[in-house]
Image (cartoon, rainbow, N blue to C red):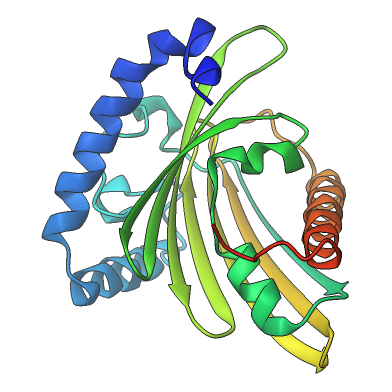
Length: 224
């Protein structure tokens, strides 16, 4: 892991460290009630038919994380997936909510992650990846876990604002149903279609389930 911290990513450390510091300060000031109030206010804002922009002051209380040019919403897409995993529901939940720096292996972008565990039920994850042009992109995930069967993710990216809700249900003692509901708001006119987004998510979750089932078969612990 020490080798991975060096090289081309070493220049990103001041940028991500500053973001981490800001996140810690913001989240430390926000109680659960304030968080819910902000999300309710944001929901009301979305329902205003005359508005086509996102008020980032209601987005996690993290103003100025996104550039001013990215406040317009060009498209909104909803995708739902249902997957089955041949593992017990408790193992699946612990494994899926145990966010780790090496989770980038499941993505086609192969991003790097920095994971901050702020509380038992709250995680902040910073994602860093480079595109085909070698441009660096940074995204922030705010994760709230609700044991024993649900969790929620809010993501701020440079091109989109994404929310995800996840629910697990035991089908049999060794089979789990995974429900995925994604709401994607694109801040750029150049974005994938809904079918393309669904295909990407479908492949992504197939990779995750493959890793989940493999770890269970090999007798690896769900966390740690």
